[in-house]
Amino acid sequence: MDMSLTQLSLTRLMDLTGKRALVTGGGKGIGAAITTRLIEAGASVTIADLDPSGADFAKQVGATFAQCDVADSAQLEAAVDMAAGNAGLDILVNNAGIFPTTGPVGKVSDDFVHRMLDVNVRAQFSATREAVARMPNGGAIVNMASIAALAGGANISAYSASKGAVVSLTQAHAHELGPKGIRVNAIAPGIIDTPGVKEQLEPLRAGGLDIDARIAANPVGIAGQPDHIARGTLFLVSELAEFITGQVLVIDGGATA
Image (cartoon, rainbow, N blue to C red; front, side, top):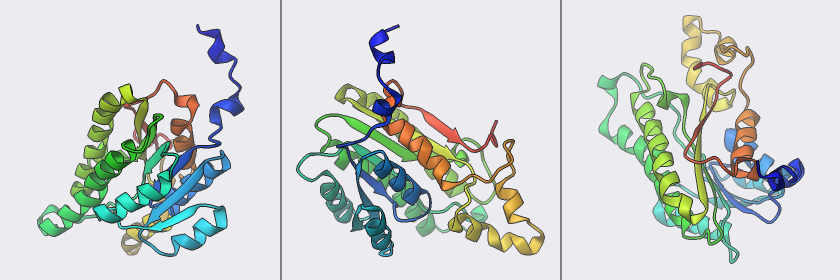
């Protein structure tokens, strides 16, 4: 064992002071929790979010805000530029995405599938490309996948396909970018207690679904919270994960175990 590694303090390994980060979809839900944790660890964070209300959250936590449709290449490049500034970028969290329910395969239009893939896959690819060009000193990238990439489910086929592609991108980019000092990992959240998830499940309440019980239906028996995903993200972008790349961290309370 290299004893010099064990001499690094835990505080030092988690310290992101001086790091510059971009979190797409960082204005609410999981993205907001990630933004908060990165700032707490010392990073300077730029939020890229389509919802203009993210500007208020950014002001509250001390982040920079860029209103951005990640599917718009020009807007995305401008957001990456803002995050990088003159010093370059250190961290990219590809969090923005479209929620899962897509409906029965016979009722899903080509336009819907195109938008799903454009936001959930192509935009992550583009953000990575732009970020890597601004990472002169290496860095860390975290892509948001889903347990839907690991196991099928009715009425979410387009979503599952998009998140499966995220896993493949993560693995491929880990191999390609490792020599540049850039680590690339993914997180696969389970069902997380966010307003968006509850909205997706709400139509099933009339059929007797207990939404809160469904969210907490995992071996741990608690509802997954945005901060659970934020903690995993902080781990993956910090030096605690120095020797980890190309991996998918499943955070689902054991639901897929």
